[in-house]
Image (cartoon, rainbow, N blue to C red; front, top):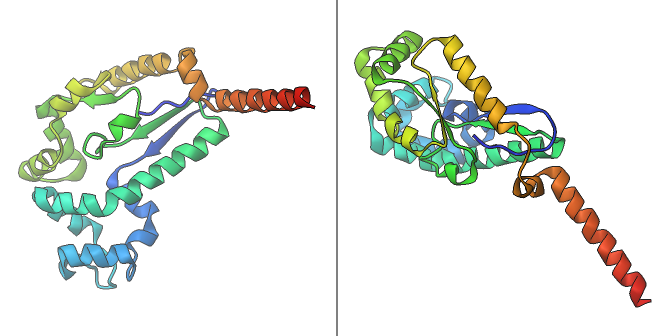
Length: 219
């Protein structure tokens, strides 16, 4: 999660791989440089009849083979990261107080170094398997492969600043989220205020006034 303070607006930037592949259409469209790199790395078997990339088929491949998943990450993460930061910049300029980054690969892409606080939504392994099978209609083996394709959730939990336990009911999770939202919406520290849009504007204005006064005194 990434918090940039200014006004009282909350926005969510979804940064899962599928979402950003769709946003970065120019990166993976047929005939583009990104398309050629992906086809070269994974072969024609990932293409649909019209020549576009079959994202479902590509997903099956990378979730079952860690080495191929790393290849895809290297190809797409730079485009995803730049898209995320561009979205943050636009929301920051609009005066958003809280910006939530929904990033499944937060630690893998090292973006946790730029986020504060880091919030991990944790669930026990048994419930995680059951929910994944129910949501995607996949087998237990396929669900386990997807889970194994990411860093262990318990390890992420240990690295988090805040943990939301999602093992219970939806109401329980919503209640925990409301408490987290209250915490991140608290008054800013002076360091956070300096990083806010209003803080930056204040610094620029004070600097401009100081320069004008200095010039006046020199005349």
